Amino acid sequence: MSEYDVFSQYDFYNEKVSIVVNCLVHMLSQDEININLFKRLIENGGVSGDIDWGIEEWNIYSEVDHGIKDKYEGYLFFIGEDEHGIDGKGELQVILNKDEIRPYIKNIIDWYSNIPNSNIQNFKKLAQKYDFY
Image: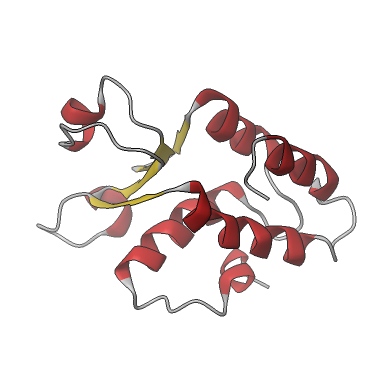
């Protein structure tokens, strides 16, 4: 099993989908959901990790860090060149609102509901509390 299996019904050749899934799988392992990373994302407005990936709400550094001048609603999913490995492509970005994120969260919940001790109950409560599920 791979963390990507959670999202197997999506078209990974679609750049938007690929960016979102590649960010989300960094917060999953084969047997559990990293609840601390999802808490940082949902409660603190952003999360990022090793190499160059992240998900964040708009903040005062969005222009400097990502070249986005105008305030956006929702979450910026980004993968930097060091992460995606395509020379000269720069940072890959997509902004999704909660309605667009909910299906991905549902996939995570559906998948990990079948795995014991996966943090699914804590994740489900967190997602419900902040209207992601």
